[in-house]
Length: 102
Length: 440
Image 1 (spheres, helix red, strand yellow):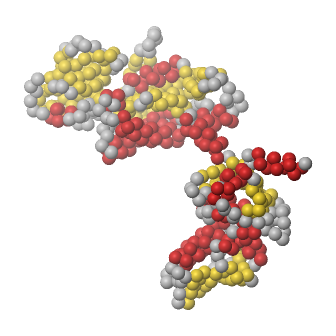
Image 2 (image 1 turned 60 degrees about the vertical axis):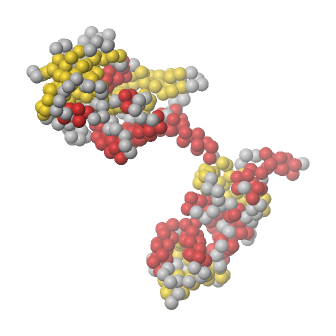
Image 3 (image 1 turned 90 degrees about the horizontal axis):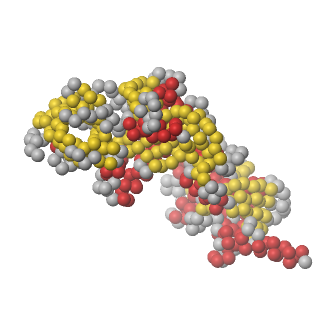
C-alpha cells in the first residue's frame, strides 16, 4: 500500500492509509506505525481513502489503540465509510475503537 | 409442530448454530454453540467475548469480513480457533450475512478438532508415509501384502545396552528420543519409511509403501547422512553429560513382502523376508560408524560407490558366502565425514595384558583366553591384539583389562596380531591405555 500519509505534530500522529488494507498492506502499516510511535499520545486515523480492511488490518488498529490506552492517550478513526463501519460492527470493533462516521 | 421439531433438531444436533447481530451480540445459539463458545457458563452475550482478536483467529474473523462484504453469499472455511483460555480447535465454519440492511450473521460450525487429533496421532504412531498409504491408497487399510522391490536399512546403537545399566531410565529415554528425532529427520529427507523402532535401532524401508526406483541409492545416501548426523547427536550428548554413541548400519536390497500384517482389529504395516533378515545380518557385521551394504545394493546404484573395505559372510543356513562392502559414500553424492582408509597407529607405552572371552551373539563363553594389546589407533577405535588363540574375523570379544570390560570385534588378522575394533569402551579407557605399568 503505497503512500500512506503520516503527519506528526508534537504528540499527535495523523495517519491516512489509502486503498485496501489487506495482510501485506497491514504489515507495512504496522511497521511504519511502530517507527512513528515515539512520544505520541494521540492518533487520528483518517479512513477517507480506505476501501477495505482485512482481519490482519483490524489487529493493527487494535494494537495501536491498546498502545494509546497504555500511555493514557487516545485514538480515533475519522471519515470511515458506511461499509467499513458495517464490517466493524460485525466483528465487534465498535466496542473496541472510537469511530467517527464520515 | 414444525417449531417443536426445529427445537428438537437445534437442541440435539452436534453442529453449532448461531445468529449474531450488531456488535456480535448473540441473538440465538443452540446448545452446541453455547458449549463451544462457553456462552452458557460465562454469561457472555457477545460472540466477540469468546473470540480473541489474535493472529490464530485471523481466518475465523476474516469470514465475518467476507460475509459482510458480499451479502447473501455463503462463505466457509476450515479455520483454527483459539479461545480466551488458550484452548485450540479446528473448526469448519459456514457464515452468511443474508440481510443487506442489518448486520446479522448466520453461523454453522462443525467441530473437527478430535478428528484432527486422531489423524495426527495416527501419523505419529505409524509414520506419515504409512498413515497416508492406509488412508488414501485403494485397499490401503486392508490386510494383506504384496511383493515389492526394496532396500532395507537396519541401524543399531553400539554399546547402548551396556550403557543402560549405568544411566537412569529417564535419561536413557531422553537420549534415545533425541537420537531418533535427528535420524527420523534424515530418513524423511530420503523418503524412507520407518517400519519399526527396534529398541535402540531402526528398521527402515525404501521403496514401500510408495515404490521408488532409486531405493538403493536413497538408502545408502540416507545411511551416510545418518552417520554424519551422529556428530550432532554426540554434541548434544556431551552437552547434557551423556556418553558418546556410535551407530552401525546394514543395507540390503531385494524383494520383500510388504503390507498390513495382523488381524482385522490390530494391524501394522510390516516388511518381511530374506532381504530383511540379511540386512539385519549386515548391520551386526558393521562396526560403529560403518555402513555395510550388500553386493545387491551396490549393483543397484548407478554411480560409483566409495568402498572402504570388501568382505564376505556366510548367511545362516546358506551355501554360498555373500559379498558385502563397507562404504564411505557415493561419487557425486554423500560422503562420510572423516572417512579415511588408513589407520594411524601408535604403540602403547607399555603392552597391556588382558583376558578376553568369546561372544556368541550376546552369550559370553566363560573360558578365558590370554592376550596382549600392543598398539592403538590415534582415534582409539582400534587396537592391536596379540593372542595365541586362533581368532576369526568378525568374532566378537569381551576384554577385561584389570577390571573394566570392553567389547570389540575382530576385523582382520595382520602380521603383528589381530586388529580389533571397539564396540564399547568403558570410561577411563584412555587412561588405562596410557598408564605406564601393567600389574595385574
